Image (cartoon, rainbow, N blue to C red; front, side, top):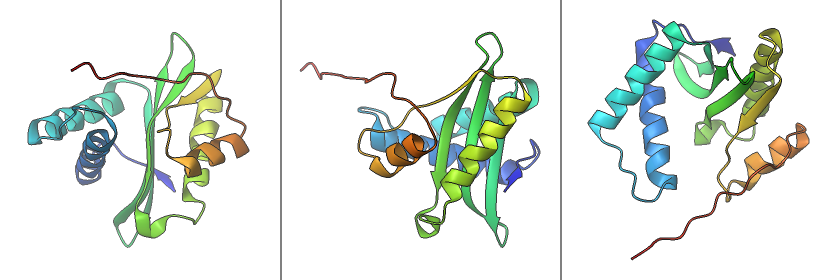
Length: 147
């Protein structure tokens, strides 16, 4: 595991693309487009350059296997996990736990008071991992489609 450098644009583009594809899968009405990926890419680049964001990656032979992206809100002293992703062929190897521990260490080093994360309700593996790592449930997001 290592920190991503803001100049590693190929990895940043992969992360932006994965982020947008996952939003399409989980958010009703959201569509991944070349524009949405480009905007997400620019957002990540800007945050890495001008904000206190951190992305840790796990690689295998220069291939992205897993990553976690954390954003520090200095006013609230909270680190938000924007996205944690492990490629399917690398799951069940404790990579997510390592990445979360890395973000938590970074959060401590910058004097954050809390780490928060949003997890899809059907992602029982991540919910279980979060509970094992000491995370507490704080909100349940609900919606109703109006036709």
